[in-house]
Every structure is written in C-alpha cells, then in structure tokens.
Length: 463
Image (tube, rainbow, N blue to C red; front, side, top):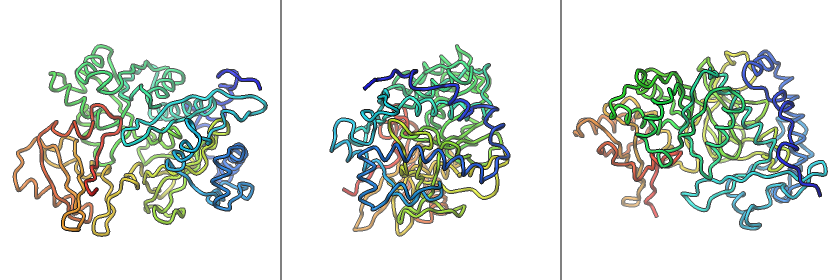
C-alpha cells in the first residue's frame, strides 16, 4: 500500500475554491438560497458518512444504537445517528492504544494511505486526548480561520501578535499557518505567558508595531495591565486596532477600553473541529460556517435538537469536510450556546449563535438553577474594581451545595461592595452565591491565567 506525502494528498487550489476565504466567501454564499445550501451540505455529508462507516469506532457506536448511516440521506436527518464525545474517544484509546480506532490512518483512501498529524489536549484535568488530523482537514481548518480573520478586517498591512500556545495543543500552530498562508499579514508567535513572559510580550508588541492581537480574552486583558504597569498606554504606545479571539459577551467593553478602544471580534471552535463560527463586520452574533459544519444545538438532558432561538443547549458538530483520517460525525463539544433570531445582516443563509455560554460538563446545579462558571465574566465585567480574574469554589455544606465566587478586586473589599457583587450575581444567576473579594493577582496560581489557554474557573470540593 502506497503512503502519500502531505502535499501529494491535497489540492490546495481546489480546497480554496470549495471553502473560499476573504471576499470570495461573501461572493459565493451571500444571497444563496437555503435549499441550495442544504443540497451542498447533504452532498458533502454523504462522503463523510461513507468514510466514517469504514472505521471500527463508528460501526461500534452506530451498531450499539441500532442506527444505520444509510438511513441518513439529507443533512437534517443526521440526528438519527448517535452523538459521541470525549468519553467515547478516550474509551477508544483505552481499547486500542495509543491512538484508538476512531481514525483511518491505516485504512486507505482511493488506494492510498494518508499522513496523520498528532496534537493533544493539555491533559491538565486527566489523561491527554490525542487530536488527529489528515491533510485535507488541516488545510480546511486554516482556510476557514483565514476566512474569519479576513471577514473581520485583517489586512496584509497588519502585524499580528498571537498569544496562543505552541506546545502539544493545536491552537497556535494552525492559527500561525492560517495567517501566514492565507492572509498576507505579518505574524508573531509570542505564545502563552510561560513561553514568553508577559512583560517581554509587551516589549515585542512595541518593538514590532503590533496592530492586531489574537488569543483568549483573559490573557489579552492581562497584557493590557502589564503594559500600563510598564508605563505604556495601550492604544497610544501600543497601537492595537483589532482583537480577535474568544470573548465573554458582556466583558467586551472593558477589554476594548483596556486596549484603547480596539475593535473586538469573537469566534468559536474546538481542537477537534477547528473554527466553527465567527463574528463578522456586522457584530450581530456568530455566523456558523455552514458550508463546512453542521451544528445542532441539543438539550443537555435529552440530547434532542433545539430549533427555537433563545433556548440553550450543547453544540453537537459534524464536519462536512472530514472524509479522510478522522471523520467527525455528531461530536458533542459540551459547550453551550443558543441560536439567534432573525436573518444575517451579511445576506448569508447561515444560522447565527450567541457564542460560547459555558460548558454543560462543568455546570453546577444550585437549588435547581444551572450555573456555568465560565460564563460569569460577563456578569462581573462592569462591577467596580473587577480586574478580570475570578474562581468559583463549590462545596457541600450541611448537606447542601454552595458556591463561593472569589473575585480579584482593586477597590477596598468593604461589606457594601461584597453585598453589591452578591446582589448582582443573584439577580443575573437566579440563585444566591457567596462572594469573597481578594487581592489583584492572588488567584493566578489557581486559575493558571498566565500559563493556560483557558483559565480554570471552577474548583469542586464536594469530593
């Protein structure tokens, strides 16, 4: 059996035509009818299902549910197949180490064996999960991300400062490739605060004239504080005009102000799938990139699809391009969102979502109310003295679950201010929680804001 090299197995020009970035994206899809889009999605899905049916993982998953992929002829019938998540992937790896049987590295495509790229999750909460990609999947990930950046206004004149990690995780690597290969902008891979200390990052930004920052909001906000501590004024000494990353909805204003009024853009994706949805120049929610992904928002408890806007559920994703190494058919991200009402202001036939609203597998139920710790930054954003860092601690007290929110605050920790924080949290969450106001930078060792792509927001002490 012949093994092909990376570039032998792909046609980049053809992929660029199928998944166009930049202005070509709007030219292709703005004004497209919903029927035409559904036909395109259904055709792409069939290739993915046919490939998935060759893998033992999917045959086992579908067989256990009594499901047959041949019963799915249209994209809107995909819910007939069972969803899977990280638990099923890790079970596959346990059965067939080290990479599991959910990939097709040893199953030929058109008589050829394809190269497989290996990354991994951080593994900070358990055994790391390998992230597996084929050449086509990798290239489409990059094209879709470049599409988002160009749609948001990135230009070849920009200097991009990236605070994504460049270790085992995929983020920094494919983001670098997307910018360098498909946008023309200058890219600087600063990495996390571990890879490049925060003060040194600020120095690099000033030295190289950074105009755009990409990464996670928590650390980008931290860099603004470090810049001011060093006597530099973001927006003047550091002329950043645009930030594109992963933002909390109601914390946007404070982040923009921290960077001198920079324009903010949100996008959503996970390591397994690449970018899924992006905010555009209309700033009206995130457009799901539906030529490449089929998203279902499903009830957290029942798993049934939710079609009505405003109802929250898990995002279950099928990648309509992943027909080689690891087909992605109904992957439950356990990230929570909701659809937005109305049509796209860009004229796209794609649905829009609110964005990331928390994780269902990191949800805390307090007196019947679902609380998502990772979403609290939106509530705290405009509170007096809030510096962007917080940590939720859940414990069982007297047989009853209680949550305390530790909040870094630069204002004096008076009883009146604690009560104000507590009242706002109770009003927005619908349930009372405890509040501790702590010194600035005192939570860093627990949240890992300087070292993690996604800071820890929940400690569970219930045992």
